[in-house]
Image 1 (spheres, rainbow, N blue to C red):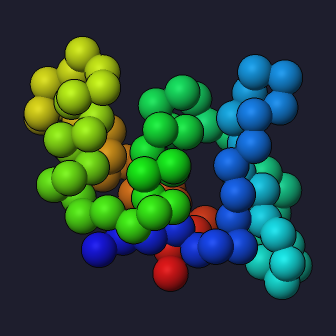
Image 2: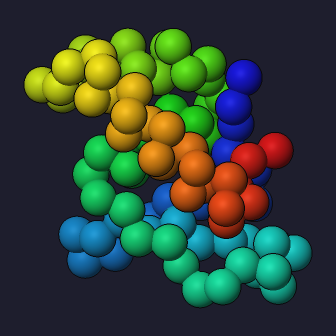
Length: 88
């Protein structure tokens, strides 16, 4: 199961989605991470904790995207989130 650390929150600032650190994560995290609508959707699902298969299903249920495209987009998102050390 993948889950975003509780020390990262998603904010909508003037129509733009950004991930910001709170607490001690603020020290090691460089600025903010900007997300599009789909990225914000994935982030919200990952905040609660979710398996990759369920994440693919949620994405295909919500957006008009093939399962293959959803898997590819999710893998890219997960890789970037891992690079920023967002997961527990």
